[in-house]
Image (tube, rainbow, N blue to C red):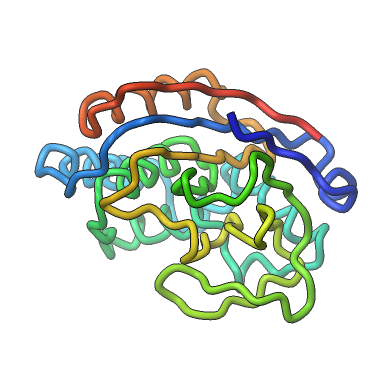
Length: 222
């Protein structure tokens, strides 16, 4: 299983954080109508439960924003992905229908409040990813948004370079219909949903929609 390590800057900015790593062997088919119904039901539940002003007060989201500020990044400009998803739900804007793995990650993220990276593990260079602080002018091609200024963001790197942040993942290691080996990195800057519950929800969805054949998890701490 891929190991997660933490740079000193992350340890100082978020000493109580945890990263739940989930690896799975599976398929990534187009999103079925049944899965999309779960996505829309989750979004509707978020809209019923929270006002727009309450989203960034959720414990997991507030803790992620605090880590951004400690690292020198403005979270209102570079929102954590869980916050962005929940804001879209509350605004009634709807979510994008991508593929089964991405849409499952979005369900888990909205329910838990955790920003989650989803990667094709077979493309990751090496058997360790390191979480550190984004550097000035460090190149990062964010999925669907081009070059992203990641200076001050928490950034996962493999032996080649950056692969993801809680705001956006990198094009190089993104999930595709050809993905057969998933790595999910659940960023737990502050506890809202117990990691065991995140595991259970994720496993149920992967078994139901992605022909899951293996599933393993490990919790990493600074």
